[in-house]
Amino acid sequence: MKTFLLVRHCEAEGQEVKASLTEQGIQQAQQLMDYLNKLSYPIDKIISSPYKRAVQTIEPYAKDPGLPLHIDTRLRKAFKRTASFQLDRSIEKNF
Image (tube, rainbow, N blue to C red; front, side, top):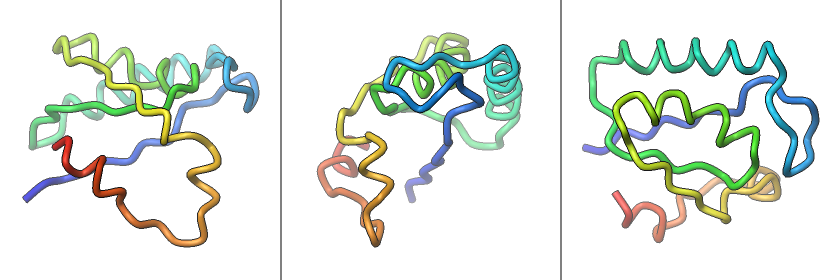
Protein backbone atom coordinates (compact mmCIF):
# COMPACT_ATOMS: atom_id res chain seq x y z
CA MET A 1 0.00 0.00 0.00
CA LYS A 2 1.25 3.46 -0.86
CA THR A 3 1.09 6.36 1.55
CA PHE A 4 0.95 9.95 0.35
CA LEU A 5 1.74 12.93 2.55
CA LEU A 6 0.50 16.31 1.39
CA VAL A 7 2.31 19.26 2.93
CA ARG A 8 1.45 22.90 2.43
CA HIS A 9 4.31 25.37 2.26
CA CYS A 10 5.56 27.11 5.38
CA GLU A 11 5.04 30.83 6.06
CA ALA A 12 6.07 32.86 3.01
CA GLU A 13 6.58 36.50 2.10
CA GLY A 14 3.66 36.35 -0.34
CA GLN A 15 1.83 34.21 -2.86
CA GLU A 16 3.91 35.06 -5.92
CA VAL A 17 5.73 32.23 -7.68
CA LYS A 18 9.11 33.54 -6.48
CA ALA A 19 8.03 34.40 -2.92
CA SER A 20 10.56 33.11 -0.37
CA LEU A 21 9.92 31.76 3.08
CA THR A 22 10.02 34.24 5.94
CA GLU A 23 12.40 33.71 8.88
CA GLN A 24 9.49 32.03 10.66
CA GLY A 25 8.89 29.89 7.57
CA ILE A 26 12.53 28.78 7.54
CA GLN A 27 12.17 27.70 11.19
CA GLN A 28 8.94 25.88 10.30
CA ALA A 29 10.75 24.02 7.49
CA GLN A 30 13.33 22.84 10.02
CA GLN A 31 10.53 21.69 12.33
CA LEU A 32 8.92 19.87 9.41
CA MET A 33 12.21 18.11 8.72
CA ASP A 34 12.38 16.98 12.36
CA TYR A 35 8.77 15.76 12.23
CA LEU A 36 9.25 13.83 8.98
CA ASN A 37 12.43 12.22 10.34
CA LYS A 38 10.41 10.79 13.25
CA LEU A 39 7.79 9.06 11.09
CA SER A 40 7.57 5.30 11.44
CA TYR A 41 7.68 4.71 7.68
CA PRO A 42 10.25 5.77 5.10
CA ILE A 43 9.73 8.54 2.58
CA ASP A 44 11.23 7.50 -0.72
CA LYS A 45 10.04 10.21 -3.12
CA ILE A 46 9.39 13.93 -2.87
CA ILE A 47 7.38 15.88 -5.42
CA SER A 48 6.99 19.64 -5.13
CA SER A 49 5.30 22.43 -6.99
CA PRO A 50 7.68 24.78 -8.81
CA TYR A 51 6.91 27.63 -6.40
CA LYS A 52 9.97 28.81 -4.51
CA ARG A 53 8.18 28.69 -1.13
CA ALA A 54 7.18 25.05 -1.69
CA VAL A 55 10.70 24.02 -2.69
CA GLN A 56 12.20 25.89 0.28
CA THR A 57 9.75 24.14 2.60
CA ILE A 58 10.83 20.61 1.68
CA GLU A 59 14.50 21.19 0.74
CA PRO A 60 15.88 20.76 4.28
CA TYR A 61 14.24 17.35 4.55
CA ALA A 62 15.23 16.25 1.05
CA LYS A 63 18.88 17.24 1.55
CA ASP A 64 19.25 15.34 4.82
CA PRO A 65 18.98 11.80 3.34
CA GLY A 66 19.94 12.99 -0.15
CA LEU A 67 16.53 12.39 -1.72
CA PRO A 68 16.03 13.98 -5.14
CA LEU A 69 13.41 16.70 -5.26
CA HIS A 70 11.07 16.22 -8.21
CA ILE A 71 9.40 19.40 -9.46
CA ASP A 72 5.98 18.90 -11.03
CA THR A 73 4.50 21.93 -12.78
CA ARG A 74 1.01 20.43 -12.47
CA LEU A 75 1.16 21.21 -8.75
CA ARG A 76 0.44 24.91 -9.03
CA LYS A 77 -1.97 27.07 -7.06
CA ALA A 78 -4.64 26.66 -9.74
CA PHE A 79 -4.55 22.91 -9.02
CA LYS A 80 -5.88 23.67 -5.53
CA ARG A 81 -8.94 25.43 -6.92
CA THR A 82 -10.46 22.37 -8.53
CA ALA A 83 -13.92 21.58 -7.20
CA SER A 84 -13.10 17.97 -6.41
CA PHE A 85 -9.72 16.34 -5.95
CA GLN A 86 -8.86 13.25 -7.90
CA LEU A 87 -5.33 11.90 -7.93
CA ASP A 88 -3.93 12.38 -11.39
CA ARG A 89 -3.10 8.84 -12.54
CA SER A 90 0.07 10.06 -14.27
CA ILE A 91 1.38 11.25 -10.90
CA GLU A 92 0.38 7.98 -9.27
CA LYS A 93 2.33 6.00 -11.87
CA ASN A 94 5.53 7.66 -10.70
CA PHE A 95 5.34 5.82 -7.39
